[in-house]
Structure formats: structure tokens, C-alpha cells
Image (cartoon, rainbow, N blue to C red; front, side, top):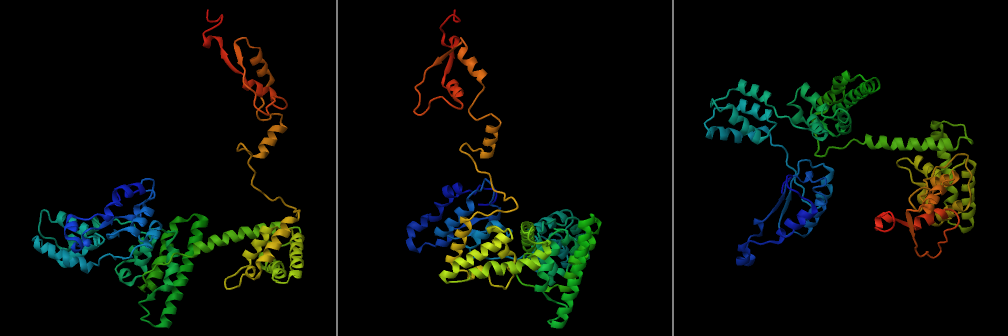
Length: 488
């Protein structure tokens, strides 16, 4: 089954689940002597299983793999795709690299000889490079360019390959591998390396910065001193590229992108290209920057809450107040003695009252002041002390000089209590109509009221009573009944 087929959960259950336990006619005749390897389920492009058409297909495929009696082969183009991370846990992972030019050239030269084509080896290399090492594209180009003449020289092959170069969509993972791998980088010129930057100019500098220290540069030849010198030069170039990016983002000078490409990708890759591992690391700066933004918002909130007790900025709040507040708010709770628990809890609550802090601020202070390598002080607080602290805090009422935003509560009918109270204040309670409409309904000669038995507990009096009576009277016209004077 390939990507053009519907591979949803229902389809796999109907068509595939029964086939996994089928046997051939030879299997029934030969019994145990039959070869079970003749059946196989091939799922092509499993990274394309997404959307409404293939909903639930990935989980169904995993369940089929658990219970199958025949081999199941799953193929994908993007191994790093988020969609197949769960599937990879139930498969034997085999990765196939793109074939080298030398591997393809031998087979293509053999085909050209059998077809009577005269193509020199140098020309064949240009054809293979122009097709981006795609065997099918190489065969197609050879068939097309030798349709009239059975010979092809080097200059003609190079010119045709440049015109028919295959446009391949490349992601940052593959692009950074081409830049930092010595075998790939040595075959590219400056323009080719610059094109690697433009596959995603916002992420490529981060990928290069994350992965260049993991490469063993070929220029160093294993010398540690030369390696450090190359790393230093590459780091300086990346810093210069960061300054150029700041000018681009701040002033909108997008014409400086080629300069950023040279400083952020081309020069570091030229210095550090060599032997690298199989794994390309994702930039950790993205996660660190997200965490920085969240902690910055927490500090802003803390600084606004303690504004009446302190005269500190957000920076001084982080450096001067938060470390000491963390000690004061946690150390009294680190006790196992029963007589000291109540006194420690009361001291912590008193400090929180003095600085106008809430229970959420207590958690925020613990999180902001926690650095890597330090022990979390909450782990040293016994669970019974945590429970006593929470109960004591919730039992008391705490006044704050700022408003604590809370989500509005929903009423019975889905509306908020605030909107219902607002309508009642305006004199428009729900379920009550105008008195004039009620009078018109009761006094109209065209309407006949039908009596209904009253429900238990419904008196029709009080607030909205007239509206309830009007609703209870089902009116039917004399014309619709076919009776009365109007009929005549």
C-alpha cells in the first residue's frame, strides 16, 4: 500500500488484518514445509499517513505489527518526521544513504555499453551529479539525450546536466550534513554552500552553531591544538553572522542575507568540515529561548506583586530578592518535628503576607531561582509539611493590593453569572416578556387558549409569572380549525 491508497484504521482492519494470517495453497498441501517468507506486507511512505483520510491508521498499523505472522516492511522518506516516532519503536530501523557517484557510474556505464551508447566516464559523472544521484532520472536523461545521436561528449553532457539539474527540496538536517561532512562539502563551491543557507535562512545558522563542535575537522588531522584554533575561528564567524542578523531583523536590511550566509554557514563549514557522526542535533537555543520568555513573564508578575514592599526593578528582583526569598520560604518547612511544623508554616505565611505573595508566587519563586546543578529545595520538604502548609494557607483569607484574575463561572444554561446578574440589574430578567404582549394574547378574539394541567411546584406567580402563563396557553386560530364564523 502506497501513499495514494487510503490507509485509515477502518481500511486496514477490513483489508489488511485478514491478510496477515492468510496462507497460500502450497501452505495447506505442504503443511510445515511451506516457506512462510513468500508473503510480505509493504507499506510505502508511512511518513505521509496523516489527515482525515488516514486517521487512526498509524496506531492500527502498530497493532497489526504486534500480532502479524508475516513480515511488515514500512518505508519512509523523512526518518526524522514526528509522525513515525511511535512507529519506529516497533520496527527494526534500517537507514539507507544516497548512493555515491562511483556506485551509480559503474551500473550506468554497463547499461550504456549494452545499448550501444558512447558516453565517456567524465560525461557520465556530470549526468549523475545533475540528476542528484537519482538512478531513474539518470536513465531518463540518457534515453532523451541520445535519441538522435548514440554518442555524448563531456561538454555536451555538462551543459545538458546543468540545464536539467533536478530541483530537490532539502531540509535543514540534510543541508547541515552536506555543509559539515567533508565528503560532501569538498564537492561544493561557494555558491552551492550559500544555497544550503537559503533552504531555511532562519534555522540554518542555529543548526550550524549546534553541530559544528561535534565535527572532527579534516584540516586539523587529529591535532587537538589545531582543532581548537579552527573552532575559535568558526565561533568568531558565527558571532559576526549573529550581528548581521540583528541588523537585518532590526532595520529590515534583507539585502544583507548573502553576507549572513557567508558568515554563518559558508565560512564555518569550510573551516570545520570533516568527519561527523550519524546524528544531527536539533538547536537547543529554541527551547532555551522559550524558557527564558516564560521566566521573564514570571519575574514581571513577581515584580508587580511586591511593588508596595520593595522598590526593585525586574533585574534586581531576580538577582537580589528572589534567592533570599527562596531560602526564607522553604527552610522553615524543612522539618520533621511535629511541634515545629505549625511554627514554620506560620512564619512562611507571614512572609508571604508581608510581601503580598500568593501560593502561585511561592511556586514561581522556587522555579525562577532553580539553576542547573542545584538541588530542588521542595524535594527536602516532607509531604505532611506540604499538606499542612497548603491547608493553613487556604484556610485563611488573604488581602492583596492587586486583583487576581479568575475565570468566570458558568451558570446552568451556559451563560456566565456576571452576564445574568447584569441583566437582572437592568430590569430584564431571563424568561420574562413585556406585559403588553401578554395582554394582547389574552384579549385577542382570534385565539383560543388550551388548558394544560399545572406542574407540581409551578404556581405562575412571582417574578416572570405572566410570561409563564402566556407560554402555557397554546393558541390555535379558528381558520386553522375550520370552525367558527371566519370559516363562513
